[in-house]
Image (cartoon, rainbow, N blue to C red; front, side, top):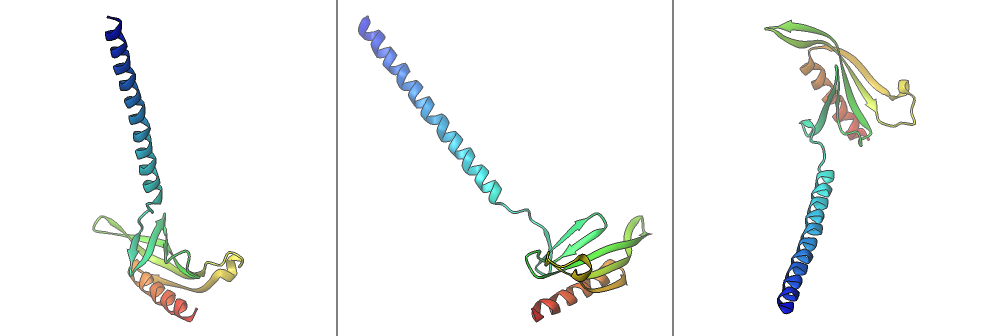
Amino acid sequence: MAETKKAEEKKTAKKADTKAEKKPAKKAETAKEKKTEDKKETAFFEYKGKPLVRSGKTLYYGDINDPYVVCLMIKSEKEENGEKLADDVQVQLLATDETLSPKDRVIKKSEKKGLFTALDLGVAWLERQLKKG
């Protein structure tokens, strides 16, 4: 009987060891999952290969790591078929250099009717300015 008790104790000890080994493996998997989640970038809507980000009535077009971006500010809206559409939109080509004062960051400025017209102008300005360097 003493031998069977020892054998049972060994079996339970082995089961406890295998359970202890399994738990850290699960933690390691979750740590790997967290790392991959951290690496995932927030996907932005893109227009012509550059990010287009909206914050309220302001839209920013272009990569913040580039020397210039376009800022579109919706000044007024009109309602058409039950939907609000941008009417007057201010377009600004901005330098991303933080050492410049806010006034000096504005390279070009205009106001257009409609969001598409404003965005089209901003894209043209941005492409031209980025080619200049």
